[in-house]
Length: 137
Image 1 (cartoon, rainbow, N blue to C red):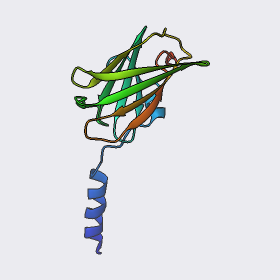
Image 2 (image 1 turned 90 degrees about the horizontal axis):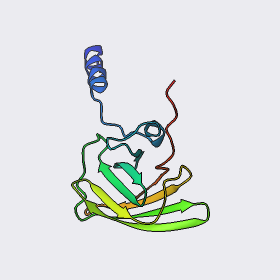
Image 3 (image 1 turned 30 degrees about the vertical axis):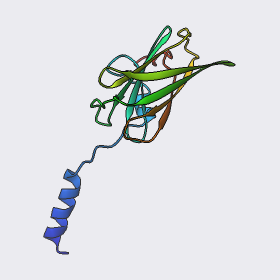
């Protein structure tokens, strides 16, 4: 390959910028559009918003565009110490699933979410929805 073609090929590679997924480490200190904790699965960004007795899971693609949840199913397993609570998540609005159960907001609460979109395979992620974000320096 001559020098000119090599330069063109390298330039094309530099201009080509595929959308790379964010990692959970990158999302850990970022609040989602609805004020919830963000997490990444291999194909989605998930935002979990927790209030007393209610969880809402918002679903986005890796470019943070809404993903329809019609026909989706979900489950949240809440863990606080030895206490375990299961909450069924059902489609709500355009890109969300919602579930209710008996729990209180606690920074130590851990939530494992399983989500299956209508046309996809199950995806799982873990959240700490009431953990405060580190302060900015």
